[in-house]
Image (cartoon, rainbow, N blue to C red):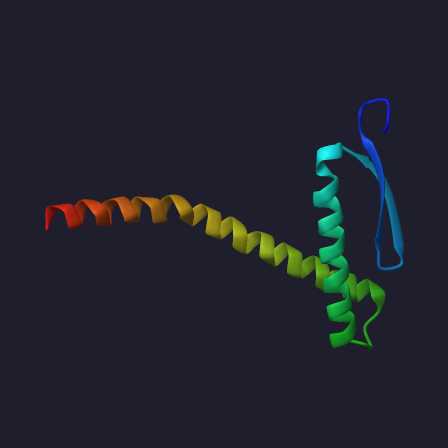
Length: 95
């Protein structure tokens, strides 16, 4: 633990060791994210065996960015879904 209350961790992402300090409660999220990235790296490495490591990481990054954009869109629609449910309930009550 660092003097500012942060925890030092090391993540292994393919051939890269990354060391940094984080809030202790965030450790599991960083480790899970690292595991996810490694799994996707291995997937793309198997799917595209002739690609460089750099290109494989670009595929991983693009996929993660795409997932993030899709989730943002999904979250933006949640309030609309709730409003539709409420309107449907009002309609059903009136019928």
